[in-house]
Length: 450
Image (cartoon, rainbow, N blue to C red):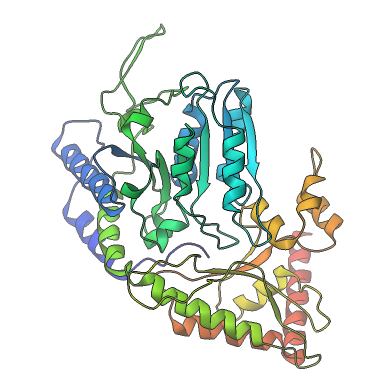
């Protein structure tokens, strides 16, 4: 489903810590508050160490990766001469940055997705060059890179941030999907900030993300708001506000999730033990899964059961420590015996009867979905007020794909179960029985609603 399964040992260690400790709000000087602050600082250091970030960086804890991206978006000093460059194959949390950019009269430019997702590097460089900032001081410009697509499985090279930096851009990376199965070394790239989400990396806790950000970049951001914890003194009534001395605290609104931060330190320790060989493990599982699914045929027509749309690795990993050039997800469509797409909602239901959790839809990534589904032109023709049902009626089918996500806890049995499920969809009798069950359940839900 795109979130890691939390390890039993992490929950046990964290629960034991809470059972023997009293934590308090970090905005105080009590013993419980001091312990919370100590745990928060340990978590910050653990994050910086995990991503090999130098002392140039600090960590701002947020509710999730989306909130981390919004912090940059709302505070970035866009002006009338600024440019925002983003890839079409990005999460909506990245696309949402354009609202702040256009509100401040900045221009928004998209790097188009290839039919398999991601982007063509020469094309991206050309767009960055054509819209480069005329002045870093007077018209600061931002390049936002999706480290790994959550629907197309693409992993654009982080090295493109070097080219963006040479042109004067600030570079922000959406690392939410990338960080869960890849080793990221921030010391190798001129990345100003990166957003992450911890539940995607090791399953627990939810409700905590982070913005890993250069202190020099943080000082460029101008927050349009303040809250408890972000200030030293506030004049009331009046207009005088003095921000707190700690840079990261200026961006941590209210009370941080201090009860959960110790779990981040332990979670990163857990993930670090597996991360070096995780790409090798997952690439092997993904190779077996894609190869097996590609061979499946309907028993009644001999036509393929699935159509794989997302990127698959172009080379096999051979040793521990190697990094894959794609992620470890698979986006596909299930086809009926005549080659027509089977509704994703039916596939999701049918999988659930086998205790298999699949996600369907566009994964909050409309640009990537449009690219691999071949509906880029239809996307261009959308109009204000259009709804999902309007769009689906226009293209004549449910919108989106079926996504299979492999992660930290995935094993061969999981892959085998998915393959056996797909085999059952290729069998006329079994598929029809599941279809009848699904239609009956649909009628039951409609009846309950009435």
